[in-house]
Structures are given as structure tokens and as C-alpha cells.
Amino acid sequence: MKNVRKLSKFLSTKTRMDGLVRHVDVAQESAGVYVGRSLDLGWGRVYGGQTMAQGLAACHRLIGPERTVHHVHSLFLRGGDVHQDLRFEAEQLAAGRSFSAVHVRALQGGKVVLAMTASLQAPESGFEHQLGGLQPEWGRPDELRSIASHMAPHLDRVPAALRGLYVEDMPLELRPSEFIAPWDRAVRPPQRALWVRATTPLPDDPRLHQRLLTYVSDWGMLETPLYAHDALAWGREVQMASLSHSLHFHQPFALDRQWLCHVVHSPVASGGRGFALGQVWTEGGVLVASTAQEGLIRPRPDGERVWG
Image 1 (tube, helix red, strand yellow):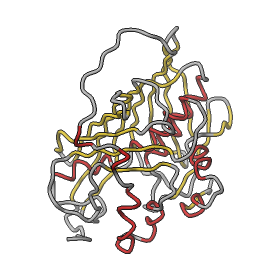
Image 2: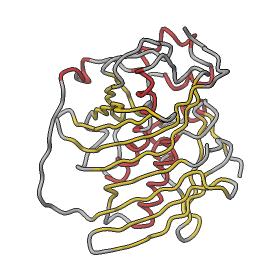
Image 3: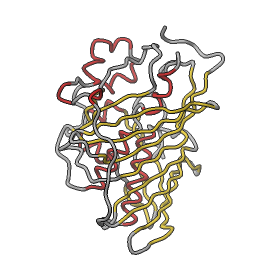
Image 4: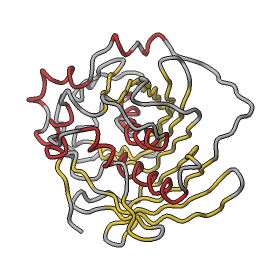
């Protein structure tokens, strides 16, 4: 089913946030079967955050509003084709008094692109504790600049297909604690912190906020292991692909009323794979989610060094 939307068209819609909200949702085709629209961000395959967010939407639609996801784990099995919609087949594996377990498959052309398992829970109270908090080196969002403003003087160095990612009025604003240019080869500790907030008001639906955080959690996470090496995610000398991605949701949050800081570090890379762990904090120091991602970061023996 050919149905690609280009980023330029997506960004020219009257209300950009409305477009993103629709993008991270799915339409029901039949019992347990849903369809998600594909969007071409410019790098030739479906953005992994899109597939995860739409898979999460399938879980939400299958179970209903009484329960929200507290844990989701995704395996990326194939690269998604931006020229085809995604078909999600969701099955409830178990349902208890407090928890529901769901399995979702995302397919294109009859082949599985993503396999997801999720656990959903009805709200309840219990023991609570939290270790750690905000660190000074992550900065404060009102003291930082957006990625778009950092990139604005350098758009001539960005491939034309990707320039739409760096316009100022995107639905989600991203502010890095430290701006690292895509062509910067300096070896540094494999860690980063990225503040994010929605630029317009959102519906008061915790499931939507979970989907949007899932969507943006995939942004640049797999690049973090490369910071420890003379290698670039944008360079054609590296083959990169997401293998798995997990999120645990700990506390409710409002992405339009709170800045969230996704702090990521890579404790290890080995066997052609990079591993990254993340925590998502509110500006008030509440840990609302944890993330983990593993991906292929294989050097291409005949790869071309685009920069440096």
C-alpha cells in the first residue's frame, strides 16, 4: 500500500502538532489490526521512533483507556519502507486484575518489521523511592539553545533531504545541554543530555504523552556510543541500525507543560554493537522514564569519510 508523506508536506500542515499527534496514532482496520501512516524524514527508511510510538498506540487501542503502558520492549527486525503504511497486529497475551500483557507485530508486505511486547497497568499507589536527581552539567532548558538554532548557520553542510529536521517551529523542541555538530569527530565521553518539550498544548491524555516520549526517545540515542570513537553517525563509513529499544514509564508527565531531559550514556560497545542507557527527568528532578537501546554500529571497510 503506497502512502508516503514527505517531511516538507508534514511541516506545511496548518497545525504541526496536530499532524504529529495523528502520526503517532493508528487507525483500526479490524479486531486487533491497526494501520499507521509512514513519514519520510529524509534518510530513506522509517524512523524507529515512529514504529514504536504507533505500536504503543496499537496497545493502547486494544486495551482501552483504563490502563497505561509501564514497560515496552521492541525488536527491530527489518528497516521500514517509507513508501508503505505499517500494519499492526495486536494480541492480548494475559489480563489480570492489575496488569495486561500485549504482543504487537508491525508488518510491511507481509514481513515483520518490528516485534513489540508491552505491559499495561491500572493506576495504583505503593512503595516509592528514587535515587539521584538533576545534575548541574545538564543545564537548564531556559539557558540553552535549540538544535535548530545551533544548526541554522550550517544548513549548507546538511544533506538537502534532512534540512527540514532543523526548522525552528517543529512540534517538539530539542535543546541539547552541549551541542555536538554531526561532523564533529572529537573523541569524548559517550554521554549526552537532551531537553525536550512540546511547542503547543496537547490533549490531557497520558497515553498520548507516552507515545510522544517514545517517539522522541529514539532521537540520537544510538549515536551516543560513537562519541567514544573517531566515527560519525552521518558518515558513510559506519553502518548503523537499531536492534532493540526499551522504555519503562515510572511517573506520569505532561510533555507540553514540562521540560523533560533525556540523559543518555553508553557503558559499553562490543561485537559490532553499541549499547546505551537513558533516564528521563523533569526539570523538577522527578525520574519519569528509563530507556535502553542496542544497535549495530559496524564500520564499513570500504566506507567513505564524508567529513574530517
